[in-house]
Amino acid sequence: DAQESRGLGDVYKRQPNILAMIKQFNDVSNWVATQVLKEDKLKKRVKVITHFVQIAESCKQLNNLNAVLEIISGLCQGSVDRLKHTWAGVHKLANVKQSFELLKACLLYTSDAADEEDSVD
Image 1: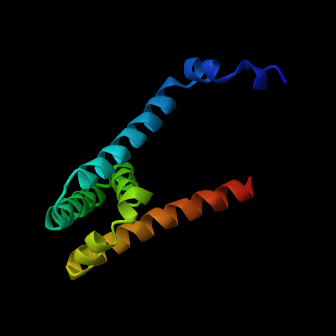
Image 2 (image 1 turned 120 degrees about the vertical axis):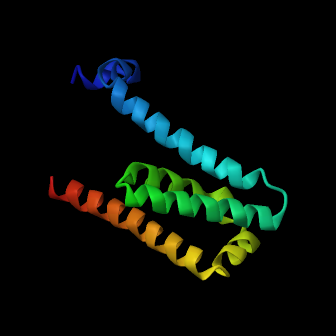
Image 3 (image 1 turned 135 degrees about the vertical axis):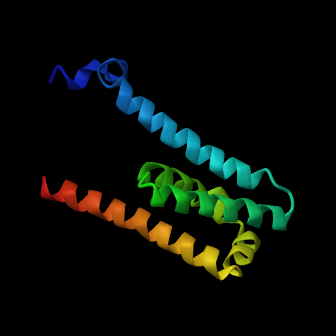
């Protein structure tokens, strides 16, 4: 098929807004992870994660689900997820733990809904 053989360069020409949105998503997710990882002290990392969970909650209340997904994706990156002592500190804050788990469930629900939609097609 001629369309399939055009390559990625053509995709950038035909779909610049979608690709810009994907880049924005990746940039924000990576930025969130970087903000957590750049802190040397455990208490500071817990504070940064707590702050991002609060921002994600605010974004959810504003129905900015893309921002919620960007933030939660950043917090769920492997490099951040492996910070076991940091997450133990976050989980000591019951309200933050609950908010994060609910936001993460929203992310999983969104992902599952997209998978179901793909399987219907």
